[in-house]
Length: 101
Length: 485
Image (cartoon, rainbow over all chains, first blue to last red; front, side, top):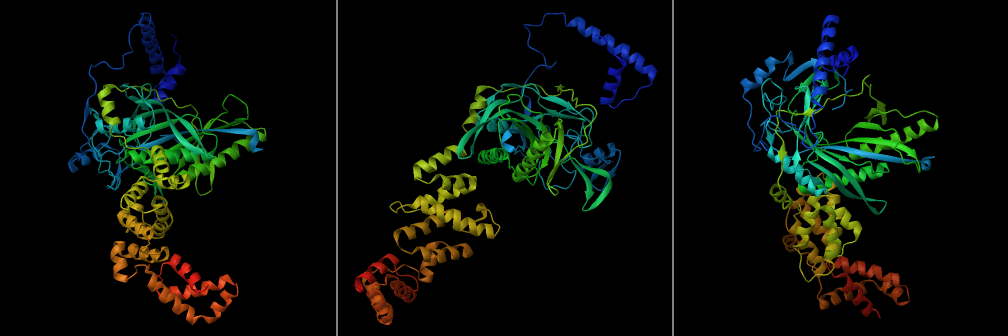
C-alpha cells in the first residue's frame, strides 16, 4: 500500500506533531514499509479466528465503588506537572466551545 | 408548508451513573466539591497509571439497559476516542465503540394520545470530560480554567433510533426516559447539575421520501423544554432553507437559550477522525447470566406498569394516573396515603388523587417544596380523606383542617379535636338549628314557600353560620326541605 506525504501531514496534524521536509520524506518511507508488512500479514487466513482486542489475557478486572481521596501532596504534585495554574484551577490557553465532547 | 415535510429526530442522552466514585479511579463524584479536589494521577492522565473499572457503574448501566428492554452484550470492550481539548487531560476519552454493553432496546411514550415505541440503538459506558471556565461572573477571561473534578465520572450514553417525528415526541421521550431512570435510581438526572444532558439529531424530508435528509446536530440544551424549543426552531430553519432553494449542510449547531436560535459552530476543516481503538489498559468485560439475573431482580415496577395498575386496581382515570406516575416520589406518596385509609370508605382512590394533585401539589408549588419535603405526611392525607368519606368532617371543613396540617405538620385527628371541627350529624341537633334559622328568616321562608327554591340557600347559609360550618350539609338540605314543606 502506498502512503503519500499528504497522509503523513494529516497523521502528524492529528497528533499535533511537526516535522521538517527531510523527516517527512523518511517517515513516508518508513510508514509505507510498515504498511507493506501489514499487507503481507493480511494474506494469512483468519476467517476462523475471533478478532483479538487485547494481548493480555483475563477479563472482569474491576473494583468496588469506594472513595479514596488523594492527599494534598498528590494533588500538589499533579499541579506541578501542569504548565500553569490560577487559584484552584489548571490554566490553559483560551478555548471556545467549538469542539464536541 | 409544514405539512409538506416530515421531521426526523434521534436523541443522544448522557446520563451520569449514580456511583460514589469515578469510573476508572477512586476519586469522589461529589458535585459540590471545591475545584480540582477530586482528582488523582489516573483521571488526570499521569504517565504510567492504570485505570480499573468500577463494577457498580457496570451494574447500574445494565440495570438501565434491562429496564429499557435492551439485549445485553455479554462481551464488551472499551475503546479510546482520541482528540485534543483541554477538558480531557489524557487526550483521549475512554468510551465504547464496537462492543457497547447494550443494544436494541425500546421505550414507550404517549404521543397524541397514542402509545408509540421509540427504539434504543445502544447504551455504552464512557467517562465524562472536565469543566472549562471562560469567564468569572461577567468578567471574560483571557485564558480558560480547567476543573477536573468531573473528569472520569461515569456516563451512560443512551442513543435512540431516529424514531421521533416532532419536537413534542422528543420531549415526551426525554420525559419518559428521565422518569424511568429516576424510578430505577441509576442516575439523579439533575439537569441543572448536568447529570442528564441531551444532544439532538434532526433532519427533514418531503413526506413520502424514504431516505433521510441531511441532519444537523444540536447541542447546549439544558432542559427538556429547551430541547423542544431548539428543535422547533430548527424545523423552521431547515424548512425555510430548503423552500428558499438552499441546502442543509451536515454540521453541529449550538442552541442559544437567550436569543432562542441555533447557531452553526465553527466546523473544523477535517471531519472528526477519532481513531478509535481498543484500550489496552482495560481488559474485556464478560457478563455471565448470573450477573445479569442478579440485576434483573432489583428492577422495581416501572412507570408504565405502575400506571396500568393504578387504573385497574384503583379505578383511577388515565389522566390522574398519568399525573401521579410522573414522579416516583409522588406515586409512592399516593400509595402510602391510600394504605392509610379506612377500608370501608367509598371512592377513596379518586378522592386521594384529587387532594394530592390539586390541594397538596398546589400548596407545595407555592411554598417551592418537593413532594419529599411535604409537611403533610402521606398517612395523614389518607386519614383526612377517610374522615371526609365517613362524614366525620365536611369537604369544606376538610380544607381548613388541611391548611392547618400543612402549617403545623399535625395529624388531622388532633386538629379536628383541638378545634372542635367534628361534623354535626346528629339529626335532632340539626333539626334544632334548622328550626332556629327558619324562625329567624321569615322572608326567605315565605319566598321559598311561594316557589322560589333558591331562597333556601340563605337559610342553609344561616344554619352553617350557626353551626360554625360543622352541620352535615346533605342532612341540612334534607331536613330544611322537610321542615318547610
